[in-house]
Length: 192
Image (cartoon, rainbow, N blue to C red; front, side, top):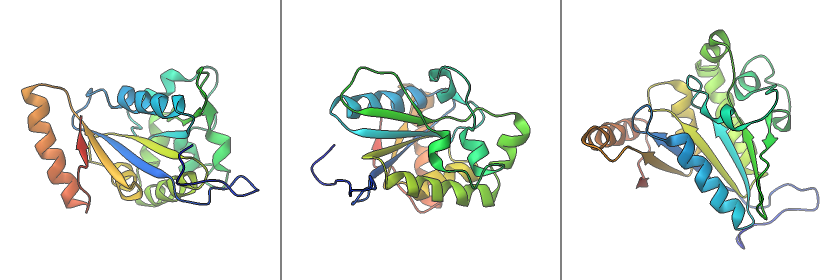
């Protein structure tokens, strides 16, 4: 844990966590991998890290979880909106002093479509705010800004990192993503 925050006796955070949205400039930019690598680095330093998968269509974070995923993040935003956040968290088995708890998306098309509605997007913001109270860091794997859940993730985050491939296509996509972030009242704090 960093020295700027702590927990109260009941385990709740006494200061806000650092919430960062990792936004893909394009599909296939490596956003999931980048998000998990940052989570691993933070956990290696002893941090308690929550990672959330707002990329409902690709569901990349689910590939890193063994066993059944129930409920997933889309269920926590729709059918199981009243369930505690802890129901959707799985701790990754990594040999580090800290912890990486992930909340993947793993849903049929019908449910992830419902998880993209404006009401579900508002619930995502609420879930991320709640996560910020229990983790040292909250990282969100976000698809390119083109849907409600991506906008909600960026709105809930303190910072946005744009992830792009190191190609001409990636450079062009970064400029588009910077513009989209501006349109939703955010900005790119870093491009990787």
